[in-house]
Image (tube, rainbow, N blue to C red):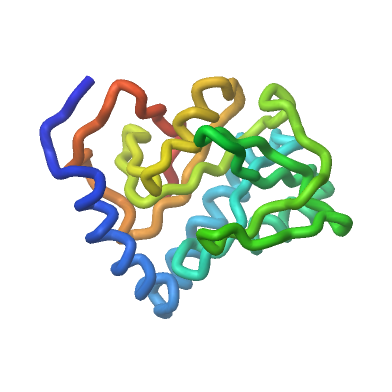
Length: 184
């Protein structure tokens, strides 16, 4: 399915700077708290025992409160590690996990226990822009689209106000994988 609209690169150029400012603002922090609450109250979150979540960059939604909540509930937290050929895998995050920054500044686990996609109940999917239908603009490399093609668990995203679009103002490609639930 192809929808006419802006290029995804144009969406990124527009949303990322706005998001960077927004996450630091009182309104952005309040919006984040509301999104955490929606997530924590969702059946998908409550029923999941293993949850995949990213380690955020400074200008993104802070994922540490999600990780803390998962740990407090004794749920298994897994985080992504990139691999060659735009692939990725998820690794258990616990007190023994050693993290290093990639050349892009993203924190990723070094070593650790790799978890099969079929063992992850819920994946909290990051991105730049989202619609109510679950259409998304990622960061441009396609890591999540490739991973989601082989993932059968539930997917949720938390879209801060600058990231949420009523409809896709960008081209939705055949290889784009929709997120099942978008909290905004």
